[in-house]
Length: 260
Image (cartoon, rainbow, N blue to C red; front, top):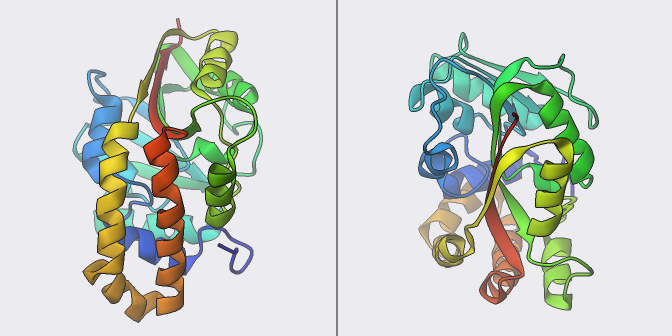
């Protein structure tokens, strides 16, 4: 998949992903999966940073369902941020959620200013996991939690030819890392209570359902907005993704760690 207008998450891609996953969502599982990422952690009234806020649906769920006090969503592209502000405004939550464009690199916040750092399937775009986790640790208050899901590769070293073909088809600058590299990055930053939970089994089934929907009514409806060629391109991506999900090489994963 190619960038459009200099952006990876352009309007056609955003429209296609929202058709699959719901208004404001650019990754699988919708508000239910957000709930599973934060399960057991009370975020009521807390200051939350969402790294890679995308089109805003996640932040709405964090506030409306889980009671976050204020969510600061950050992303690197104008198109998704414009969509997020639109969706958040329609939800009437502009006083509880703010969206900020940032440049790749250090987080533009002072130390110890968030209770929770959240991310859903976005830090796959950040290759240096150790630098990222140092920054997450820095901006968290003592006792704060890093709660995330991300798309991981199941091993260190080069991807298989099948995995390489899938990553190339996505065209989204994936910087995938193994569970071991994530664990090392979190521990090296100073985190404790680290847990890493595979979601491969869940997404193997979900992705097959998504492919059928792309080939069926969702794809037909989306084609009227984004064009059949773009829908067919996404069908090809899913057809490359499912074999590497089945092999376990592609392993969506929940990540959790606490700053002492």
